[in-house]
Length: 133
Image: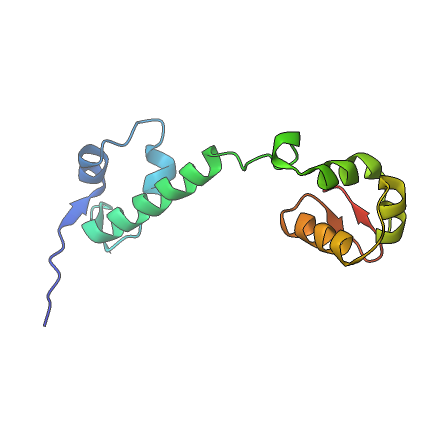
Protein backbone atom coordinates (compact mmCIF):
# COMPACT_ATOMS: atom_id res chain seq x y z
CA UNK A 1 0.00 0.00 0.00
CA UNK A 2 1.34 3.40 -0.98
CA UNK A 3 0.41 6.37 1.15
CA UNK A 4 0.93 9.73 -0.44
CA UNK A 5 2.13 12.48 1.86
CA UNK A 6 0.67 15.86 1.17
CA UNK A 7 1.36 19.16 2.85
CA UNK A 8 -1.40 21.63 3.59
CA UNK A 9 -0.63 25.17 2.49
CA UNK A 10 -2.39 28.44 3.15
CA UNK A 11 -2.87 30.77 0.21
CA UNK A 12 -0.08 33.02 1.54
CA UNK A 13 2.27 30.02 1.73
CA UNK A 14 1.41 29.05 -1.85
CA UNK A 15 2.19 32.58 -3.06
CA UNK A 16 5.44 32.68 -1.11
CA UNK A 17 6.76 29.17 -1.77
CA UNK A 18 5.86 29.12 -5.45
CA UNK A 19 7.07 32.70 -5.93
CA UNK A 20 3.92 33.83 -7.68
CA UNK A 21 4.26 37.37 -8.98
CA UNK A 22 1.92 39.88 -7.37
CA UNK A 23 0.42 40.73 -10.77
CA UNK A 24 -0.65 37.10 -11.17
CA UNK A 25 -1.80 36.26 -7.63
CA UNK A 26 -5.52 36.98 -8.06
CA UNK A 27 -5.85 35.02 -11.31
CA UNK A 28 -3.99 32.01 -10.00
CA UNK A 29 -5.27 31.87 -6.42
CA UNK A 30 -8.91 32.19 -7.46
CA UNK A 31 -8.55 29.03 -9.57
CA UNK A 32 -6.63 26.87 -7.09
CA UNK A 33 -8.52 23.86 -5.74
CA UNK A 34 -9.50 24.49 -2.11
CA UNK A 35 -9.06 21.66 0.37
CA UNK A 36 -10.68 23.48 3.26
CA UNK A 37 -11.97 26.90 4.19
CA UNK A 38 -11.24 27.90 7.77
CA UNK A 39 -13.62 29.85 10.01
CA UNK A 40 -11.54 33.01 9.54
CA UNK A 41 -11.96 32.72 5.76
CA UNK A 42 -8.44 31.45 5.10
CA UNK A 43 -8.14 28.87 2.36
CA UNK A 44 -6.12 25.69 2.69
CA UNK A 45 -4.74 23.95 -0.40
CA UNK A 46 -3.19 20.51 -0.85
CA UNK A 47 0.37 20.81 -2.14
CA UNK A 48 -0.26 18.14 -4.81
CA UNK A 49 -3.29 20.07 -6.12
CA UNK A 50 -1.22 23.24 -6.31
CA UNK A 51 1.60 21.40 -8.13
CA UNK A 52 -0.84 19.86 -10.61
CA UNK A 53 -2.65 23.14 -11.27
CA UNK A 54 0.53 25.17 -11.75
CA UNK A 55 2.07 22.49 -14.00
CA UNK A 56 -1.01 22.50 -16.23
CA UNK A 57 -1.08 26.31 -16.27
CA UNK A 58 2.59 26.41 -17.25
CA UNK A 59 2.01 23.91 -20.04
CA UNK A 60 -0.93 25.91 -21.40
CA UNK A 61 1.09 29.14 -21.36
CA UNK A 62 3.99 27.46 -23.19
CA UNK A 63 1.63 26.18 -25.88
CA UNK A 64 0.16 29.66 -26.33
CA UNK A 65 3.57 31.32 -26.54
CA UNK A 66 4.89 28.94 -29.21
CA UNK A 67 3.55 29.94 -32.60
CA UNK A 68 2.47 27.14 -34.89
CA UNK A 69 4.88 26.64 -37.77
CA UNK A 70 3.86 28.58 -40.85
CA UNK A 71 3.51 25.81 -43.40
CA UNK A 72 2.56 28.31 -46.09
CA UNK A 73 6.13 29.56 -46.39
CA UNK A 74 7.51 28.55 -49.76
CA UNK A 75 10.45 26.63 -48.28
CA UNK A 76 8.00 24.30 -46.48
CA UNK A 77 6.04 23.53 -49.65
CA UNK A 78 6.93 21.45 -52.66
CA UNK A 79 6.49 22.90 -56.14
CA UNK A 80 3.03 21.41 -56.67
CA UNK A 81 1.76 22.74 -53.34
CA UNK A 82 3.14 26.22 -54.07
CA UNK A 83 1.48 26.20 -57.48
CA UNK A 84 -1.83 25.07 -55.99
CA UNK A 85 -1.85 27.89 -53.43
CA UNK A 86 -0.86 30.43 -56.05
CA UNK A 87 -3.57 29.24 -58.45
CA UNK A 88 -6.19 29.23 -55.70
CA UNK A 89 -5.60 32.81 -54.59
CA UNK A 90 -8.63 33.95 -52.59
CA UNK A 91 -11.05 31.88 -54.66
CA UNK A 92 -12.95 28.72 -53.81
CA UNK A 93 -12.40 26.11 -56.50
CA UNK A 94 -13.24 22.45 -56.97
CA UNK A 95 -10.40 19.98 -57.36
CA UNK A 96 -10.95 19.83 -61.12
CA UNK A 97 -10.95 23.63 -61.46
CA UNK A 98 -7.89 23.97 -59.25
CA UNK A 99 -5.93 21.33 -61.18
CA UNK A 100 -6.70 23.05 -64.47
CA UNK A 101 -5.83 26.51 -63.17
CA UNK A 102 -2.57 25.26 -61.58
CA UNK A 103 -1.60 23.39 -64.76
CA UNK A 104 -1.98 19.81 -63.51
CA UNK A 105 -4.02 16.76 -64.41
CA UNK A 106 -6.78 16.00 -61.92
CA UNK A 107 -5.56 12.49 -61.08
CA UNK A 108 -4.93 10.45 -57.93
CA UNK A 109 -1.57 12.14 -57.32
CA UNK A 110 -3.16 15.60 -57.45
CA UNK A 111 -6.00 14.47 -55.15
CA UNK A 112 -3.47 13.02 -52.71
CA UNK A 113 -1.63 16.35 -52.67
CA UNK A 114 -4.88 18.19 -51.92
CA UNK A 115 -5.68 15.73 -49.13
CA UNK A 116 -2.24 16.25 -47.59
CA UNK A 117 -2.65 20.01 -47.74
CA UNK A 118 -6.05 19.77 -46.01
CA UNK A 119 -4.58 17.59 -43.24
CA UNK A 120 -1.77 20.13 -42.75
CA UNK A 121 -4.36 22.95 -42.63
CA UNK A 122 -3.01 24.63 -45.76
CA UNK A 123 -6.39 24.22 -47.43
CA UNK A 124 -9.98 23.81 -46.29
CA UNK A 125 -12.25 21.38 -48.14
CA UNK A 126 -15.71 22.97 -48.17
CA UNK A 127 -17.32 20.15 -50.25
CA UNK A 128 -17.43 21.11 -53.05
CA UNK A 129 -14.39 23.26 -53.40
CA UNK A 130 -11.17 24.17 -51.69
CA UNK A 131 -10.21 27.47 -50.15
CA UNK A 132 -7.44 28.88 -48.01
CA UNK A 133 -8.06 28.81 -44.25
